[in-house]
Structures are given as C-alpha cells and as structure tokens.
Image 1 (cartoon, one colour):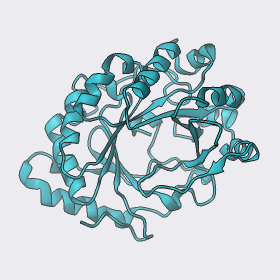
Image 2 (cartoon, one colour):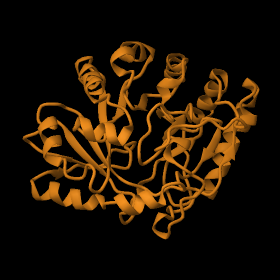
Image 3 (cartoon, rainbow, N blue to C red):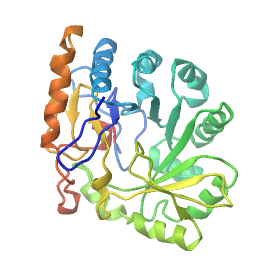
Image 4 (cartoon, one colour):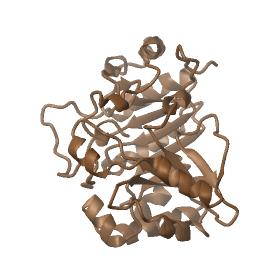
Length: 327
C-alpha cells in the first residue's frame, strides 16, 4: 500500500482528527474568552462518520492517528471513538492530545479502548502561572494524571508547552528538574499567529531557537527524526530520563518534513494548519459504499498542498484559533 504523497515528495502516514471544537479551558493564546458555540455550525462528525473517514485514510496508508479538539474529552463518546479507531485495520499508533483534566479519572478506560500514546498540554510547572495561562487551577491534578500514565506503561507520554515571552519562557530549570527522573517527551512549541491573536502574538512571541541554543550549549544531543514523527526537533541528555523537543514553525525549512493531514470536527480536510481552504469530506461519509469515492477525493487533493505555510508573511489562512482545527 502506498502512502499519500504530494508533488514535493512528502509522504503522509499521519492524520490529526479533531472530534470537537469545544474546549473547557481558556488559554490566553487560543481561547482567552472561552469557547462560544456557533448556533449555526454543523454538529461534529458522529461515530459512524468517523469510522468511515478513518477507513478511507487507512486505505491510503494512514497508520498514525491523533485525536484532538478543542478538548476531546468533552465528548461523552470519546471511549467509543478510541475503540472504533483502534479497530481500523492499519492503525498502529493511536494518540490523543488533551489538557489532562480527566486524565486521572479516565486513563484506564481510554487505554482499554486502545489509546497507546498521549500528549498533555502543560504550559507551566508553576501553579499560579498555569492558572493565569489556562484559566483553571488544575495543575496538581493534571501532573498526577501524567504520573499515572507513566506508571500504567502507556507507550508514549509527551507534554506540550507553548512558549510565551515574559510568561513562561524562563522555566527551563524547573522543567529540567521535572525531566531528570521522568521518561516523558517535553515539547516546547513556538507561539504561532492565528487569525484572532495578532496583538497577543506580537506581545508574547519568542523564537524557539533561543531555547534550542541553550539546550545545545548544555550538552543536549539532537536525535534523528522518526519517519512518522511530528514536527519537533528532539534532544536527549545522558543525565535526564526525559527528552525535549522543539517545535519551531518560523524556522527555515520547517515544512520540508511535513507528514500529516488534518480533518476538522465537521469533516473538512485541511492540507495545512494555516491553509486558505478546507475540503468537505462529510458528504462522502454517509454510506459504507462510498469508500472508493472517499479515497479518490483524499488522494486527489494532495496536488493542492503548498510547499510551505505563509506565517512569515502574516498569512494565517482560515484558522481563527488553534481549537478550531485541532492544532
């Protein structure tokens, strides 16, 4: 089976599927005023539509799937979605990105459903800073859930921290203490401009390469990139159980290693997080007999994928905030 390829020689075995646009956090860089539903918006894909979508992507070589939101755990049928995804032939890695608010209560249920990798958003290890960033004083509970995931033997446990100038960009020493004995992957993510965040971006953007230089000077060693890996440049150090990844979307050639496609909660295919258009797949998810048409539609869109995003030019596409597309 051939994985989808584009005209620049990139392959796409990795799908990020948003299952809900809603989120229960009010992160300053994403939804500072909280989530407000659009009464005219279509409902998220239902379980049957999700199953058909995943069978279509698996038919063209998708083997890594990440469930995203909004916050995926606000869907009451999340475990059913995970179980359905885990049962799709060809899906080898089933991951989810979450804010971790239900992690300590639902981890066992999610693992039983087939989840084998998790990313948890933890933008600060300082309780007060975490509350200011997210709007919720839940850090201790979320960290306890992460320790549970490690103890349960989840195959991959990673943490995401968005770098914010004058907010959390001086916390590397605390993070190093955390990583010394915990085999987690920490991802520092450079703040990205979205349609709603220009003023915030200008105030808080800091280049991720600054932190990367600090790591290199402290003896952290760059690792080779796995074929189905995300966009992070990963580092390890002999004195630490954990690893650190740097996601720097404004760096040179960031898009050269792109290997993922995205589908929104309502079934629109997005070729790029910051693309100018979405391709509606939902009409092709209404009947099990539409699989060939779905596969044809997915493959036929790759010619439209651009070589790079246009963030350097201030063009953020149709993404108003990261929760709208799943990040």
